[in-house]
Image (tube, rainbow, N blue to C red; front, side, top):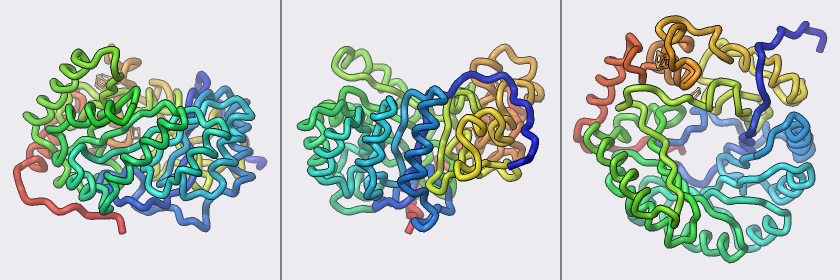
Length: 366
Ligand code: SF4
Ligand code: FES
C-alpha cells in the first residue's frame, strides 16, 4: 500500500483484543450485540491469518485475547488457535454459549493452555433462559458444561445479560453462578446496538425495576464478599452520566471481525462513513496507530460542546459513539445518556415508552 498514512494522535498501547472468530451461533438471543448483517462462514479468516493476527497483537503489547463469536467453538481450529496464543504469551479467555462444546474439547483446550472461560447464561429460571436463548434445553446443557469447565481446572466467569424478562433475578443469577463454581459473575444490562435495537421495546425494563436491580447488586456484593466477584455493566437508558464505552474510543481495545476488519468497538460498523482497515491489508500495529476509524474519535480533540469543556471528558470520553449515532444521527454528539446532552430527554422518553407494560414477542435472528 502506498497511501500516505495520517499522523496518529498520541496513543498508548491496547490491552485487549476481541477476536470474533465466527458469527455462526446456535443461539438466537434477542440482545445479540453482533451486527444485524452477519459475516458468513465463507468470509472468515483462515487459521494462518488468525495466527498472524495473534502474533502481531502480542508484539504490539496486547495482553489478553478474548476468543468470541458467535460461538467460537464452531471453529474447528479453536484448539490450534488457543495453543498459538499461548505460545506467543497471550492470556486467553474463551467467551462461549457452551452450546456445541464437548467434554473432549474442554480437555483439549486445557492441554492447549487456555487460561479462562466465560460462559453466558440467559436466566436463573430454566424455562425463561431457554426462551431468551431461542434454544430448548440450552439451560440444562450449560449446567453440564459448567461442570466440565470446573473439572478441568478452569477459572469460570458467568455472564448474564439483564433485561425486562430477568431483571428481578440478579440474586438468582449470582447464586446460580456460585453453585456452578464461578469465581466471577458479570451482571450486564442490555446495550441497545446490533440485534438488540429492533428488540428494544421487548427488552427495556422500567426505571423502577432498573434502580431496584442496581441496588440488589450492591446488596449482593456485600452479602457474598470474598465468595464471588460481581461486575456490573450499568444500564444506559436510565443513567445520569454515560460510561466510558470501551474505556475510551481506540484507547484500550481492538476488535477483529470474522473477515478481518479491525474495529475500535464491536458496534462501530453501525456508524456510516468510518473507514475500517483489514488485517489482510495492514499489520495490526499500523492499524492501531493510523486507521481512520481508530483516529476518528480517539482522545478528546474531536469533541464539541458540552463535552469539550466538561471536567468529565477524560473520565467517560463523551460516552458511547455508537449510541450517540443511533439516537442523534451524529457519532460526534455527546452520548444522550449524559444529563448534559441536549438529547438526554429523547433517551428518557424512549426508555419510558419502551418499558411500558405490554405483551412482547422477541424478534429472533433466524
Ligand atoms: Fe461526559 Fe460529555 Fe457528559 Fe461531560 S458532557 S459528562 S464529557 S458525556
Ligand atoms: Fe461503540 Fe460504545 S458501542 S463506542
